[in-house]
Length: 381
Image 1 (cartoon, one colour):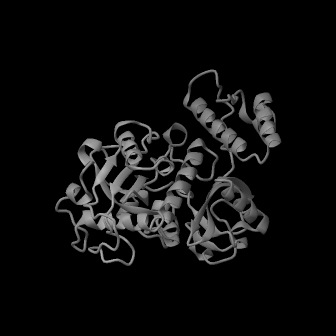
Image 2 (cartoon, rainbow, N blue to C red):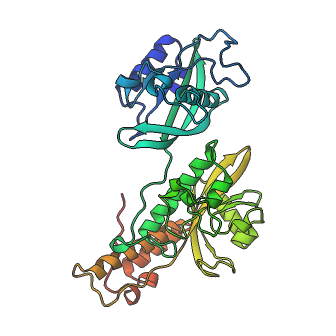
Image 3 (cartoon, helix red, strand yellow):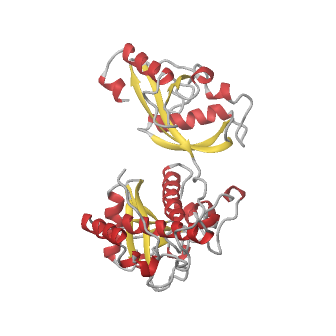
């Protein structure tokens, strides 16, 4: 977008389109950008067949698709999905084109929709689309991702991951769910109710929605909750009865709430706090750590958080690190997870240095009395 805006003229547009289709300039890993030449289809408040301005009507064709330029450039979604319709019988390509175009015409928006690739088959996708008009040409520029959580991580010795222990798999699953939930809220389909009742977002209580699409779920106890910056709980996948209540019912006091706001405002971070008195799953007073991220919905700020227990599984001290046994593998995985959790939740540079010192000198939580002859080594990357 910046490359097109800082330049001017059809040559600049052509250069960007060519670079997108034939080079890696606008690719980051598996992420890529697509350009579609828009008509007035999807323009808010207008008849889809009308042309209210000097913009040329097009067939909404791909000018550049970085992933599949040979097969998609010059095609539109109706060409790609010939004969496919929505449940209401509407041409699927036309319906999706209108949906994405509406977001583009209104300043940019996330959309979620069904997609298909040879590698993944039918799947749900979410994309950010926005539009510009340059030299009489309207473009929809979009980039997206598969809308589903990552593959679940395993615990020590391929065991099921647990929310009540600080394992490496728990750290991974917590951040995966935070990202998954945040993406969903940003799409038109997303809602706080989905975070509260769908197992797809870790919900585990008596009133969950049982749906076949929720087969890929999170281990019990890895769930999401959301709280407005104003202090009202709007979603809770563990205790739906907390929805609508003040933050104190979930977090205990305002200082914890303020710590979550600071973490969310920083772009996402970990917060350590104590479980409230009626937390049957983690246990009253247990030390919890949650990853929080910020989301803006209808002009209001919220944070979505996923908690886990900051606790270490007792190591088998009869086991030694001098031989590869099941117990030594388990001890190493458990200790690494707790060390990572301890480092991630330090609140200052001095705190990070202190935990690092304990790891190196084998003191505190990492003394030989607690971890035997196992030791965690730290390397800068």
